[in-house]
Every structure is written in structure tokens, then in C-alpha cells.
Amino acid sequence: ELREDTMLDQTGWLCPKCGYFNTGTSICARCGEELIRLDPVQPKPRWDWGNRAKEDQVARILGMIAIPPNRRQHPQSGDLIGEFDEWFDGGALRFVTGYTEYEFSDGSRATVDVLPYLSILIELSNGERVSVCQEHQ
View (spheres, rainbow, N blue to C red):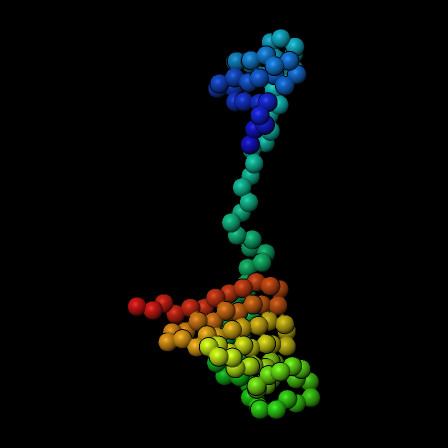
């Protein structure tokens, strides 16, 4: 990105000091001021690989949703505290009209929609969100 007071040599540039229009040189022919070249703006990377969701974390949560380990109707010592309908080793769940919410002991959460096709939104403990959606025809 170039500032307003600088232009590429292809067309010329206005000296920020004296306003003289210069061509073919990087030093102002009137006052000796140098052309200020700014580094082009580097676009931000589309992906931040440091925050990429880990497959093993997603797989672990999907496994616990599919078959909650030691599923029970009442909490045991060490279970998550809150208004849940069921508990299991490592988390708890509540049934809400249209979806089921899962909370996990590591701070992750998941929402499983009640639809004719699979739709799960997982929020990992680091804030990364992963969506698992069945493509319907």
C-alpha cells in the first residue's frame, strides 16, 4: 500500500516536501527529497495453523456423543455441576427442544441438532469451533 504522497515510478510521484511532480527518478529534481517507498501490505494468512482444531480432540468428543461412557440419570461425585438431564464420565448433557447440549469436563461443548440429517457444532476448550454436517440430497 502506498501513501497518498507517493506513487510508483511508472507514473511518477509527488514530492511530499515541495509538491513537485517527478518522473524517472527516486530523488526529487527540485529539492532532493527521496521517494518514500513503503513495503507492500502483506495480506493476513487465511488460516492460522496454530489454532487448527486437532482431529483427536474432535474424534474424542464425537465418540463421547455417540456412546457416552457410563451414562447415568443422577450425578456422581466429581461430575459437572448444573442443570443437566444426564451425566457420563467426562461430561453431562441436557435435552432442549430441537437439540441436545453436551458439556465436557475439559471445557469443550457440543450441540447436536435434532434434524433428519446429522448436524453437530463443537466448541473446543480453546474456542475453536468445528461443524460436522451431513450433506443432504
